[in-house]
Length: 325
Ligand code: UDP
Image 1 (cartoon, rainbow, N blue to C red):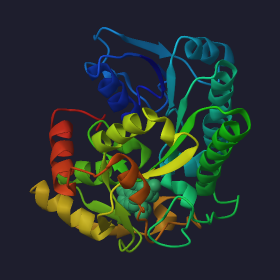
Image 2: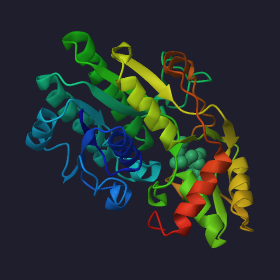
Image 3: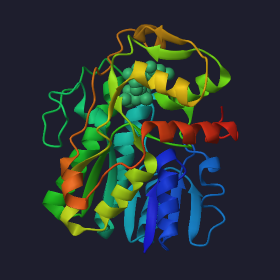
């Protein structure tokens, strides 16, 4: 099969490209290298037969159309990413997420190609109930808070994808990723685990935002990529939304402790108010836990790597100079 992976030089995209190549497929990765990096696909993909890298933006309709022409299936992962970037650049976020997905979905529709849409647990917003299930109501904050521009853009992607499925029979699958982590995730975009591990390795304070009692569930990128490929390989997934994540819930204080212990670091753990970490009036989520029964029941999904194993992997990755420390 020939696959187009948008955001193919990104953190998750690069693992997806690698897994597709491993399975003997050919892959075209399209990435504008805004947050993606050549380092992610070099050496994992670049020198391998069947792999083509195109530097460009999915918002270039002519280019995206041509690449969709050449592909049997599209994985659309290109997007703005990272809470700090999203908070500081809401216009860019909407353009690079909602507007970009419209181009990809239209190109797929014109050529009737199956599309996977990478969405995010951010669409649950502040969360109405726990664990968060695909059919739950969604509770987003107001438009003057930058964070929600991302949630709203991802939600629009989902609405458009499902609308194309219902009205035009376009085969689409939506995956809502929950706090996906692993090597190649850069700390520069504000994600917690790369920050903590790099701080611990340098012996700097591990900086926990807020009181640190907010929770997240972390899943390894290889588990996510495996689920994405399985879901796309079965027509029963078409027209549906799937949570993909782990259900092992940790507070950020506990995460900081795990990082310190696994890295053998004596870094102190400090707390920074949200207003200083992001912008004034920043709204964080107190708890985020996915209900993964749908993906578990349908494709037997189970996360395989523990948080300690993931921290160990990140430590090795950064100690080899990965991730633009
Ligand atoms: N966080 C933190 N220190 C950091 C970066 C993030 O304590 O250096 C917190 C952040 O406020 C949030 C949690 O860790 O409560 C997860 O943040 P991340 O940006 O990784 O993911 P998301 O907020 O999208 O779940």
